[in-house]
Image (cartoon, rainbow, N blue to C red; front, top):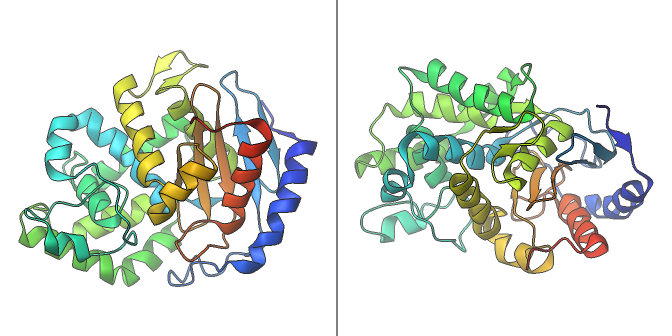
Length: 309
């Protein structure tokens, strides 16, 4: 079903776009630094398959940290919450997403939650399979099923760009390996993690994945329960408490939608029981979130009373 351009959404996008001038693209990953900071698009995907949009929703974006909530769902299905949360905590952190500070003060050195880089690396470490390729294909197949698109793949250019510059993630991984939280070869883990972050799709596909989470893991069109209800709810809770890096509390108060952002400028939203949202706006604020994307969600939440609180 084609996505319909929507006049009301176009008005909100035009208003939010004014904020792009205050943001900056993620140029510390060279391949992401070439994005146009003034881009902004949104797609909303409903359970009946209908969708509305504004902006260039066909533009491909890499998932980056949005992939963390999807890999968490897969690993929770594989291992169960007991196993996973023995190794990764459930608590929000006020620290930046790539901070190592809390790992040094906690005993055992267990990442506080799966949405910061240290926690996400531990989660990716738990993806089952014989080698990097098999583990990556399992995650990719899971994402393709949720997005209902078998052509979704990863950007080799972005993955390579991240792999070559992932010095801090290597440091986190070696620290966690020293404390026996990670037990595989660090280079293999970084290879898998950078490919995971480089999986790319458009705003509509992102909105469809958000819709699956919004519907407690069910795909209303196929009738399949892709993610068990209790696992989808765990993931949505992390989206509320930790999904927007160390701006999650403010985001919950102002907007009140389970959401996960990535430094490519993507935001995936899941309005419980209603619809999924996919946003792309590569100009980021100082905390790593799409500056115009957050403004757009704020306008959307205010206009349509979307806050779950």
